[in-house]
Image 1 (spheres, rainbow, N blue to C red):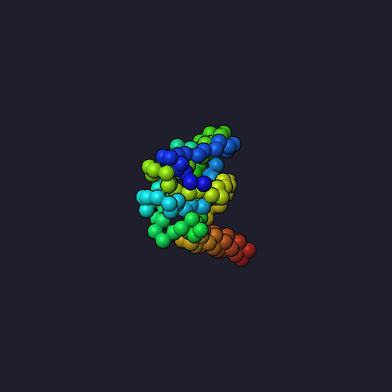
Image 2: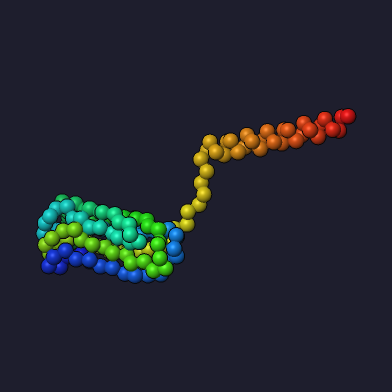
Length: 140
C-alpha cells in the first residue's frame, strides 16, 4: 500500500492493549519507484512514541520493490492504542507498507554475567560459613 495517493497520507488502526505492556510492530517497507523523492520517509506513531523509517528506491522497480522487514517497539499507555503510519513525502509516490502485525513482547529478566558470578560467589561463601559453623559445633 502506497501511503501517498495525490499527497502525503496516513493509515491507522486502534486496538486493545494492556497498560504498561510492551508491543512489537513488524511491517514490510518499500517505496513507490514511480516518482520522487529517491528517499521515501514515514513515521510510525503509537502510545505517544514515534520512530522515523526511510527507504531508498534507487535501482528498484514496480516488479522488484526490494521490501525490507522493519520492527519497532512501544509501551501501551492505555487500554486501547492507535497505531499510525504517516508519510513524510509530498507527491503521489510515497513509502509503501505491507504485512503489518502487532504482538505483545514478553521481556525476560536477563542478568549480566558479573551479577551471576557475584551471586554464585556469595552463595559459596554462605555455604562455606554454614559448613564451618556446623563443623565447629560437631567437634566440641
